[in-house]
Length: 219
Image (cartoon, rainbow, N blue to C red; front, side, top):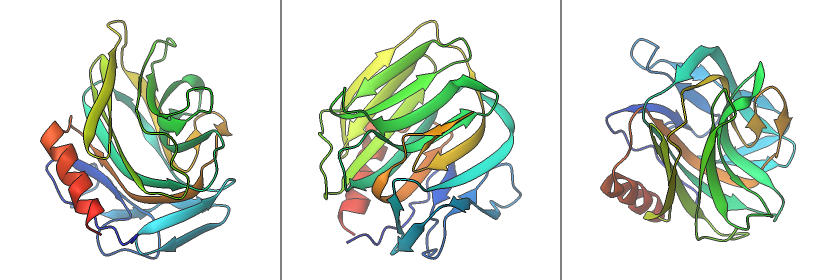
């Protein structure tokens, strides 16, 4: 089933869609008093049902906000069910004035597996690759965990790999997207379903990632 529900935990910044919301994507920001809701803009055709959204390869859900610099830990948890083997991005944050600054969870055919990547203002990057192939038509849980200098990826609740780049510094961002790589250009649109995307302002532990996987796997 695709009936996902957000799991409140310490450090939760965004829940897309939040618990109980099945009609549209919404954005929870720790900068808003009381975690107020702000709608994400829909670009193109996005069909939403049961807490998951279907993207057609040319659509995305976006949020544009004031510039921030990410220099501390954060994590992303999401469920994906692609319908093609195209190169595509599930989630990204980027910066409108510089193609270098971005973070993403994506699939590149040249890599062959799900990947997470972060790149700072100077073009220095770290990436981590999962051991899970694309899995067309099947749900896969992915989690990316960033601690300063190190990026790790989990697939279906299990740690897979990480990369450390001691030269990495903070990177700027002022936009986020589900279903595309959204920075100063928009590329690598997603085709398929995305469910329950959660963003945290901390590094999730292995136990927390496993709990998120188990919660979604029961839906």
